[in-house]
Length: 195
Image (spheres, rainbow, N blue to C red):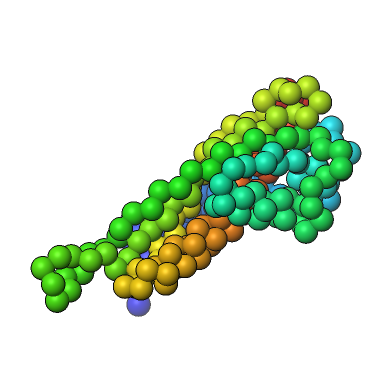
C-alpha cells in the first residue's frame, strides 16, 4: 500500500469546489425563473383581481374577412374563453390580420415530360394588435407563423380538400400559439405598468 499522492488530492478538492460553485449558481439561476401556469388562479397583470384564465377570457377578437382567418379567430376565441365564447364586456380588444402562403414543397417526375407537384405547404401568418378596450391604448403587437404540410394527389378535389385540411390544422396551431403569446404580452405589460 502506498500513501495518496498530494497533487491528486489538491486537484480533486479543486474540482469539487468548482462543481459546488456551479451547483450553487445553477440553483440561484433556477430560483429566479417566473414560470406560471396559465390555468392558475394567479393574475397575469399586476393589480388585476382575476386569475389568468379569466383575464384571457376578457379579450374580444375583432371580425376577419377570409375563411382561414375565420378559422384562426374561431379557434382563438375558443382557446381564450375555454369554450365560453366571447366576453359580454371585454377588457381587451384584439385586432387580428391573417395571411396565407401556399407553396409546392416537392416535385416528382411522372411518366410525362413535366414535373408534377406532389406535396405542398400552407403557411398562416398572424399579425395582431392587443389594445385596452376602454382607453384604446396599444398593449402589445406581434407576429406569429405556422406551416402545415399536405399531399397533393392528382385528383383536383382531393388536392383542394387536402389544402383546406392543412389550413385548418395550421389555424388550430396558430390560435394556440397566439394564446400563449398574448398571455406573455399581458405579463410583460403588467410588469411595465407596475414599474
